[in-house]
Image (cartoon, rainbow, N blue to C red; front, side, top):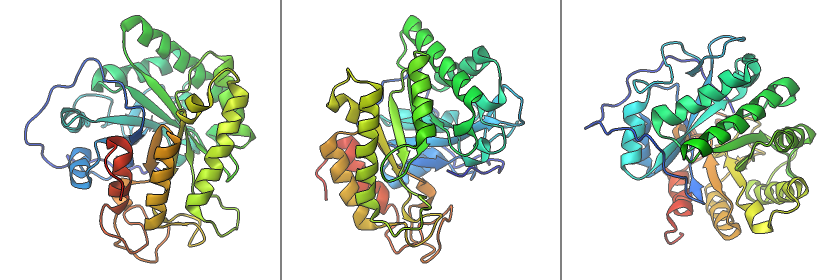
Length: 340
């Protein structure tokens, strides 16, 4: 998924500050958490309230330059991991009963050497960055978006998984709940060989991967897709792949390790890959029945019909839709409310 390098503004003012918790609450077993483009200058708390989302995935964190071990929001040195950057927004979202999932990587970082584990060769330093998110913001899940060059960087993959294992041992010692999710590209039949190699390396390093999120869009295979049906096919393929990696794990538990990420409307490839308003209801119903872990989309700022006919836009879906249609369609996955 794409990332921008735009300096953030102050965002919308928040009515009253809330304290950030020292220990984050565990994530729900089934959660809808669309991505929020963190470089736009908008307030995640304000958009979460407007769209009805309790949980958001904040994208992205990366280093400012290749070779660095310091991560910043959007790779901007004036946006450090600190309570002054997104702290009031995150606290407000948590006070409403939700939380955020900070995400590292994305296409820009993964193709410029600024994804943290690609950039930094010190496993301990990588682990400390992950831990700082937990202690600074009170989050309980960290997402790692690995695609582009990063998914073929064996050294970076090994460092990242070693750092995950270190953080998990730290969390156990300190009584914290910390999950890690991997966001990976997929075909309609499941992960490619490089994605499987990444997960195998995690097993070899004793790193627990709690969720594997499939980017069920941008297939770029030249075919015309039924995006909802192909989401189900890709996830079914991943389930079989996870069963081979974890042969002692039950089928139900494996399904609860799976997440899917849609791109509402026309994706980067074009009209042949259009995720429709009806697809949203179909996928949410399937996800709830299958009891997968995470339902998401890229990205919250696209959840409107402001640019009909335009593909791959950052600020609109390219199809006719009500504003926040996809948020509302996915919302019952977390709440368990009656589905439309």
